Image (tube, rainbow, N blue to C red; front, side, top):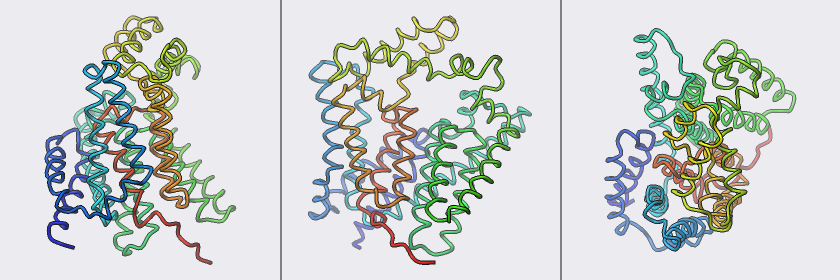
Amino acid sequence: MKPLRTLYHYLFYALIFTIPFEQNVRAIPNILLAVLSILFFFTIKKSELERLKNKLYVLSFLMVLFVVLKSLFFSTFDSDLYILKKLPIYLIILLLALPIENKKGVLISFILSTGIVNLISIYEIGQHIYTQNNFEIASGEKINEILVVERLYFGLINSLSVGFSIVLINNKLSPKIKRWLVLGVVLSVFVVFLVVSRIAILAILIVFVINLFKKAAIKKTILLMGVAFVGVLSLFFLNDNLSKRFFHSDKKKDFFHKVREWEPRYVIWNCVYSIFTESDNLLTGTGYSDTQEKLNNCYIDFIQKEKREQWFVKRRFNTHNQYLDFLLCTGIIGLLIFLALQYELFRLTKKNTDLLNILLIIVLFGCVENFFHRQVGVYLFSLIIVGTVNNEFSKPKMKTSS
């Protein structure tokens, strides 16, 4: 590999390494993007540009182009710029990844960075327990002040790290590296349960169950699942934060009343349904800014308690669902393009269960979060495309007889 191309690879690995820290070192990934963009023209090969004909790249460009042109046509570009300015990052990373030959380096950079974030977070949590003499983190505001990145994205980062680690563990790597990867998986699982990232816990458990069915005999799988179920159930009894986060056990009245009263998405998704049924522009949507205003107005009408209403309006809660976000903001057309993109990703990875786990993780998180609204979310979605497509893992592994 030529020196310039080698430098390009290491700079790209550095860019991936910064993703979990993006909220704290935003200038560094921006500088790396600029440098890589310049070097790109000196390193890219004509054969690598042929990958742009891949349907996944075509659909990615079509999705961004549709959203931008729609905003220009309906004169919402200025008001929607807070979202629109993040979308080009997705396309830039896809382009910059074209010359990358070693995707293992990309995944290892991300896994290593995640491990460092986890160690920092454990230290910060220890400091919090020592100074406050408690670990009451059922409330999102408290834990978000402690972690390097917000709890939901902390969970997404760790879920992806687990998924990528499984991909590497099941491929040809030295036993020493595999042992470090296993250690990283254990650390990620530990911190996800520690900070009670609900969707991450669910995603990781599903990934583990899939891998159990894939590798073990049915009887052994059922036995291991039973042990795991008892273990997880025990954690709910032992960890007060778990029961509070999942079941709102610190609140009075029945479970469903507590969900209606304390789970923001219950209110948000009711408002989304109301806005959708009253919309007169289902094909192309109403844009990001107008949708947010309609959500704010719905919160005022829907929520009875004034303090809770003010909290919703002040926080300006979006749809908290990437699919509903596309539906309301870009209409049925935008949603169909996004679904087509995900289907193409499924089609390209369907023969490899480990890669399908990665897709499953982002689908689950997309059901509870709008990752295109956050720069770190855009980076993570880009990483999934880069890490799973056109690489040495895409081919299904031959089963060996035991």
